Length: 140
Image 1 (cartoon, rainbow, N blue to C red):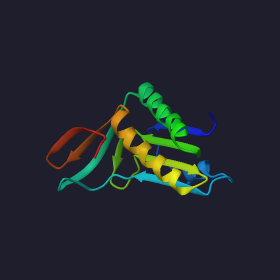
Image 2 (spheres, rainbow, N blue to C red):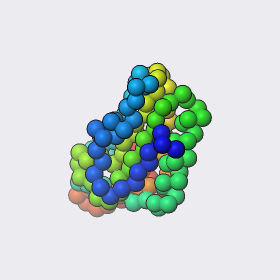
Image 3 (cartoon, rainbow, N blue to C red):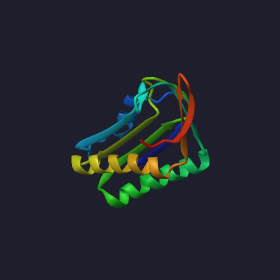
Image 4 (tube, rainbow, N blue to C red):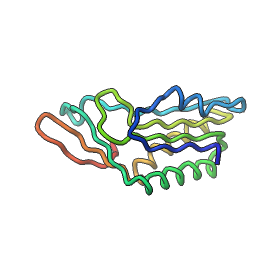
C-alpha cells in the first residue's frame, strides 16, 4: 500500500521528512507524535536508552496496526518509524504521522497507533542510569 510507510532503523529519524511524506492535497489535518528520550524516569536520571527489536515481527506488527487504522478511520496516509540502538537524551526513538481530511480522525488514529505499538510490537528498551541498567517494555 503506497499510503503506509513503516520503518525500523538504526539511523536517526527525521521528523520533517515524515511530515512531508504524509502531506497531501486531500488532507485537512496532520497529527504527529514524536517520542523523545527524556532525562529522567520515576525520579532517576537517565543517561541513555537502548532499543532492541525482533525486526521481522516488529515490522509486521507495525504494518498490521497501520492497516487497521484504515479500517477504523477515514485517513489518507499513515507513517510509523521506530529507532533501534543506542539513543542519547533528546534523540527521537519514534515518529507517528497521520493525515486525514478532518482533524478528529488524524488525532484518534495517531493516539491509537502509539498506544497499540507500545502494547503489541516487539521492541524493548534498556534504560541506563548512573547506578546500572534495566530492561523495560517500551511502554510508559
